[in-house]
Structure formats: C-alpha cells, structure tokens
Length: 181
Image 1 (cartoon, one colour):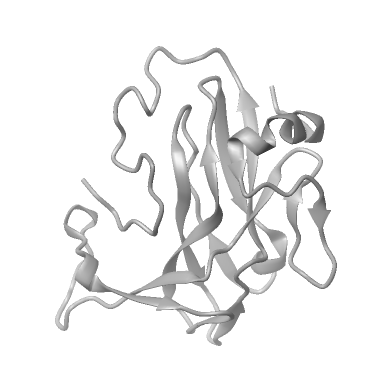
Image 2 (cartoon, helix red, strand yellow; image 1 turned 45 degrees about the horizontal axis):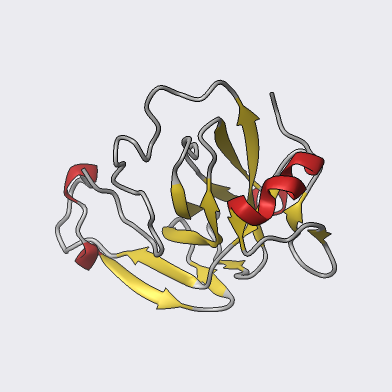
C-alpha cells in the first residue's frame, strides 16, 4: 500500500533526519511532506566525473575515487551534457516492511535535468547518492538545500532478508559513494 502524508508525518522523525513535516514552497523548489511522498533536499557536495585521458569506456566495476572531483557549492552549475553525483541532505532509515521508490521533481525535469534514483530497500539507511544529468546544451543551476526528488513509501510484508541482513555495500553511507562491486 502507498503511504500518505499522515503516515509519513507519524514515521518521519524516526525515518528521515532532518525531517520537515510540512511542504516548504516559499521561493524554493519544494521539499518536505507531500500528499503521498517526501520531497528530499539536495546537499551542497558534488562529485564531478573526470575520467583519465584516453578513457574509451566507463566500467561500473572499476570506478575509482580519483575519477571524481569533489566540490562544495551553492548553487552548483552543471555544465551542458554532463552528469554529477550528488546526495540527499536527509539521512534515511527505511523500516523493514517499507520500500522507498524515488522519482525526480518536475521543476528540474522541465529544465532538461534528469535525476535517476534506485529503490530504497527495506532496512537500508544512509544519505541517498544519485546522479544528476544535464541533457541540455546549456549549463543549469542546481540549488542545494532545496527539493531535488521525491520518495514514495510502499508497505508490504517484511522480507525474509533485508538490506541490513545481507550487509549491503551502501549501508550507512554518509557521503557520496561512487559505484562499488
């Protein structure tokens, strides 16, 4: 079952930190509790991909921290046709019987920005790492501290083995994490 704003407000302080119980919209890209989701905020830390000269193919099995340049900025200007790794300001603790599905916000998508996120598995916890891709031929401003994507919370029967049980490789992440194998 898809969880509503009442459930999110009830669970929020234990599940999301920091937690915004309302929907903040005043001169900002909205964040906080919406009708059926939680709009989370963009942090001010970014990893810009800088592959070594002569790289012909990007391999998710061999991404190295030195292939990224860390920047702290507000706003962040994302160059044309490039991507950056980013993270949520919020730290999430997903309950065992919940799956979080994430989707980008329409404000950014209407500017040619794609925010791609993966599911938040039962008992996963951490700050969400995700790519932001600028599909346009122009630079685009990204606004830390404002909404960037939304999590929808789906309730089901608790799984036999959760993300925490299998000691998932991204469990507890606090900063931006490049791909690991």
